[in-house]
Image 1 (tube, one colour):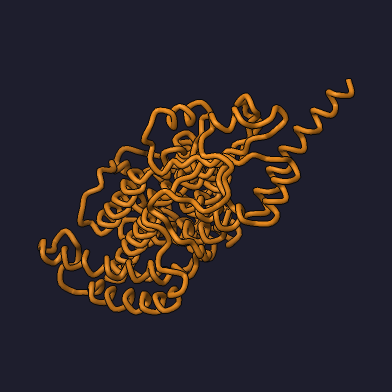
Image 2 (cartoon, helix red, strand yellow; image 1 turned 60 degrees about the horizontal axis):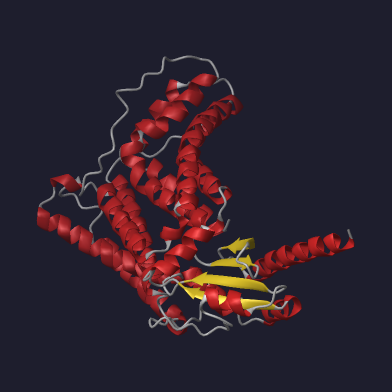
Length: 426
């Protein structure tokens, strides 16, 4: 789990807490379970922490559902159509956060009634229900986190990153409650500055949408011009964010604006978000990849047809099948870092591996579909180890770094060989 994803989740939670329909309720909510009226700050902090724990239960549960969805439908998460769909979702969430487009999330505030009590479970129950009560305001930003959780789960086949992101979103959302409940701090009065928070939230969501487009078209900007483009991006981000007039006295709420005014806000924020996208490109690791659109892949492959490989190899040979696609960013990263490396070539020589590379840039025939279904490939890249008869030995899903992948493959094959040796002795 990388610190960048954790930080983004925390910021999303904090921005959600600062939204216009959550922020004014923070003092009222803490007063409901008595955190601001305790005899000692430790007691107030404890009650607030119990409330935040209840809130975390709701968001973590939703995060687990998203992660499970990602692991189940992982093979589709890298599809261009899915990427385009998610990009549209991000842009729609941004506009809904601005109150320009509706988001059909029911308001549970009037449907849920929790009887006030001094018992310890009272703030916990309030926290659990708060995730539903605040849904109309938190849905855009947490919806973006859920999409990211599903994407990461499809790549890593693990629930842990998703649970961690959900926890840090809850911590960001709960920070103001902890400050007021534990230390009786007085937050600034609601005002036009909350509209700035709203615009910042929309800006973050639009930027995330541009990063999803990058997954479709390949890394941008080019490595050689990242520094220059980042500086340009910072300028664009600041200038066009100011031009969107988040502190304007006229049209206090976006739904009071004319269609022309709304279009102007969206246009300026889109340019600002593109600038932020360029600026944040420096935070992504360098790819140094030349994207090819003709399906050609430059790394070593003994075969590009699985049936041919199975008929040609010896009975003791192990076949390493690489499932990849041109639109898969992680595939390109693996193509650059792992496949040409001396360590990987030493592994090939050590175990006499036969490399088969299957191109899934387009699912253009039934044979490809059959292989995916037979081996239940959840996403790309996947390295599948099989024997001459096509029986699966094991697999490595996704790609994080060269060292980890080589260790996984080495452990798998060495264990298989140890089993063979032990059987030979019996």
